[in-house]
Image (cartoon, rainbow, N blue to C red; front, side, top):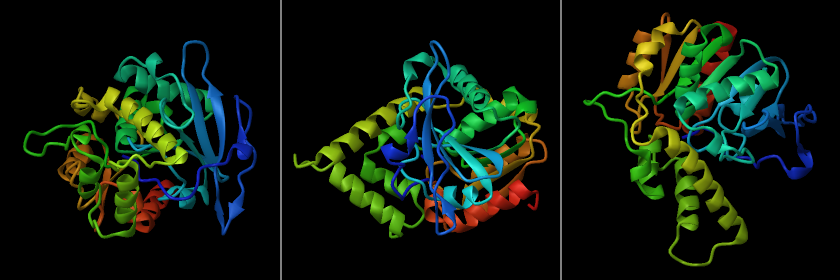
Length: 304
């Protein structure tokens, strides 16, 4: 799942299609709001929607299984110091071409195709959950192409004594206790309210709610293609190949991917550091956005 959520996505009037440069992001209360553009990666390759905001050094944000339904969490804070590029995987937003990615290796090389299309070299890459797994694999496959790395509760490893919860074996309401440390928190309650409305047995959904349901189904199809049943596919053997300075972040109360895995990632990646965020579950950026963003920014500056 992703730790992003909140403000409305860019409106169509702010969107530029094709491989051209996006319009300058607007700045509200000191934080850039994102623009959107489409990247055509070429024949028989996906078309990718990229959300962008901010100015400065490039930072690539790889989302989790929930996509980026809104520009919140750490994203506005990151955009105050970086030019944030957040590509959406096929099946999320306006990105298409999931059938062109047949397996996990295709997914990882798709990530490099996106970097090349963006014209970005050795960026700071932040990946959350599914995106953290993708970022770790990319950094292991081509160590010289990732400049700095932050992995927020990535999937990709397995221990029988600490099984990762099956994201696809729960109803939407059942996921909330797995995603949040405090189910009474505002973001957890908002998710409960939203899922209650979307998945109600009553046939009274608005046209907008139906569109949201369709978008959720498309995104979960992508997530299931690569995560189900267990994404463990040799990543642990490859982690020592990572050369980028790496920060591993975890919510101390993560019930979806147990914090035990933070230690394993840190032990296998040379020189990796671990930051545990207290009173946070799997969606660190939603539940504890301020300490989460502060840790990411400090790591980017080389302060941590």
